[in-house]
Image (cartoon, rainbow, N blue to C red):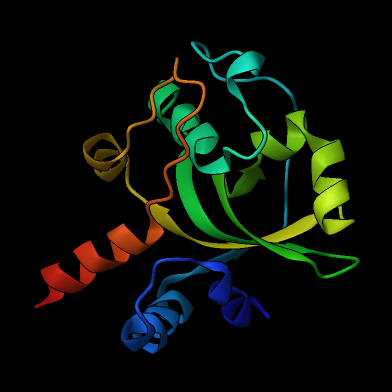
Length: 158
């Protein structure tokens, strides 16, 4: 169910799609538990969690509190099975999806679902710091890193 949704990722050359899918299948993790608590890490305020900026929102979280981990992948609706390419956080093996928490009405409009199963790849904090334009105070820069992280891993494996 998740691997077909990877077609949502833009910018992947056709010749790399199959290898990228295999890498995702091998390395991706599924999370079914989520926490809808609205408490943000210190240094991050609700006005900095912007709809349509899930990647940057989740990167801001880890930059403020490294007890969270940053993941990119797919949020798959439990009821209507709508899928979106998405950035989210994990803490203690539980999803904290602050874009959903603070903008649930928009998610319901786009996917008709309020509950999701998440599938993704962890992108380390040091990679985010080196490659993302996001900061805890930025408002409008969305920066997906998954394909760039894939290319980094493939080049390191050679």
